[in-house]
Amino acid sequence: MTSRLMMPLIGLALTLTGLLALEGLSRVLLTAEADLASTNPDWYQYTPELGWERRPNFKGLVAGELHRHDPARYLREFDEQGYFAVDSAQIGATPHTRILAIGDSNTFGWGVPTRSAYPEVLDDLRADADVINLGVSGYTSLQGYASLVKHFDSVRPDVVIASFSFNDRRVVPSDSAADSHEKFAREARLHRFDFRQKLYLYRGLERLLTKVHLLRSSGDGQTTVDARTAPTRVSPEHYRANLERIARFCRDRHVPLIFVAFQDNPAHSEHVRRGLAHLSAGRPEQAEAELRIAVNMDNWFSDLARKYLAAVLEQRGAVEEANLTASLTLPPWKLTHGGRPLRLDSEYNDIVRAVAREYGAVVVEAGQVLAQDASLYLDLCHPDERGHRIVATLLNGMLDSVLHPPQIAAQP
Image (tube, rainbow, N blue to C red; front, side, top):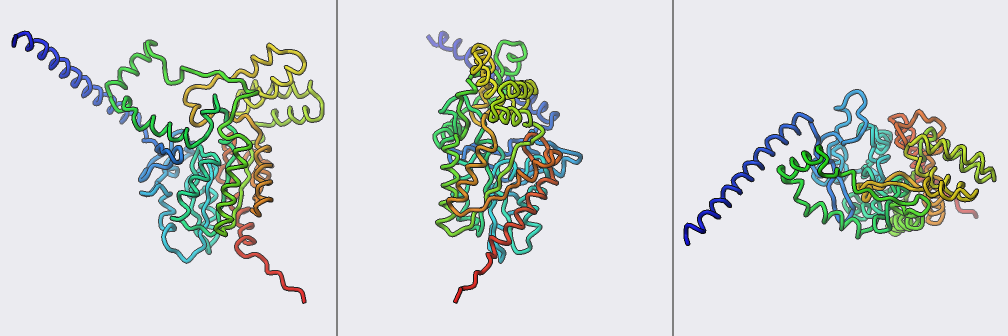
């Protein structure tokens, strides 16, 4: 009886020993590969409240950013609370006016050094103010409002600057993938309990099987949607509601609010805009020609062009081509961050202006100024260092009237 049990136990022990040896070997090989590739840790971490936020004590380069000339200039450094290290000293008690900037990658300063982002340039322009940059790449207006609520008491700002739009307009495959607190909680749970990528043996086998085409890569398992009906991360109605929440939050605390309205790079979106201008003027043939150019450019605004081109084709009876044109394929990772924008920047900027009028906020039309010179953009929507300085200068001029409103003398 004992001998019968010994053989399976020995086999089990040998199997476990072999697996542990493979795991150890995998760790050595993959660690060496990672060291040789000089990969950087993620600058963000998932959270159920915000979707994701800056990783405390991170120091390094942000993957995907443009690192022009000297990469050392583009190092990002966050303190233990996730604030930019250059802002840490301003979170405590200072004699200066505190200005809190919330926003997306344009506020974060994607593609430019930390000190060149418009909040930090504004900080340098004003000796009487401390500007804390709370922008996070990929954020929508919903995440911005949640971030404002989370950090308001720590920063205690005297003025709030808010800027969102691009990520709100990005396509997602379903309503359940649109931004919501339920989605953020779901994503946080998924990344918290998924231990597969922590096992080097699993990662090594996954890579090997993917290379020999026995396992689909992470880009497979795609979803097809119709550009004419697909939702965005934040719909226009929810975008307005989020901006109203930000405005009410600031109004209830007697804190002035400044919205910064950006626009997409006109050099990337010019054919879409021309096509829509022709549509508005009742010239469908010219509209179709411009929209086809925009689709064939295959840039970030081509899916938006597909949406309107499909409508033009459907109107003239080319239903089959319209359906084919409107078909978009989204890989799984688009569930979280969204794909390309499916709505115009002007539609969301109109909402910004309407909310500002209703709640007594101020709008700085940075996009209108930047759009006069497409060379001020790094890419589809991000300003370069010159563009950020222009935005900071516009804000600086507006802040004089916000912080020191003119006194109206009483009439006898």
